Length: 164
Image (cartoon, rainbow, N blue to C red; front, side, top):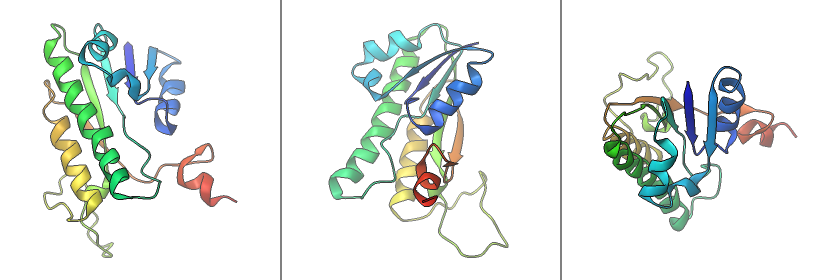
C-alpha cells in the first residue's frame, strides 16, 4: 500500500512508520504539510491510506494560548484534510486519531467506557475530543477513528518522563 502519515513525526507516527514501512511504502509529514490546501492535496493524492495524527503535544502546560493551539492543531488540520480529500477523484481510506479524554471522568471500574459511549465528559479534554471527532467525521468516506490513551514508550511521552 501507499500510505501517508500526517503529523507522523511524533512518537506514535514514528512507531507506525517503522512498523508499516516493513511491508508498505510510507511517507511521513509534520504539521507543516497543512500550510495550504494545495500542499496537503499534493501529498495525499494517489495514496491508498491516510493516517491523520496531527496535533500539538498534550503533555505541556495548558495556558489559554496553548489550549487554543491544541484545538487548532487538531481541528483545523483535520478540517483541511476533509477539504483536500473532497477534491480527489480517488479517495483514500482514512484513519484519524482521537483520545480517551472524550469519556466522562469516573472512578467506577465496573463499567468501563468504550467506543459506544454516547455521553462524553464536560471538561477540556472531552470538548477537545468531541471537536476533533466531529472534524474527522466530516471526511468522506467516513474514517476509522482511534481513541488513544496514554502512550507508553521509553522513547518518549509519559513513560519516558516517569522512568527516571
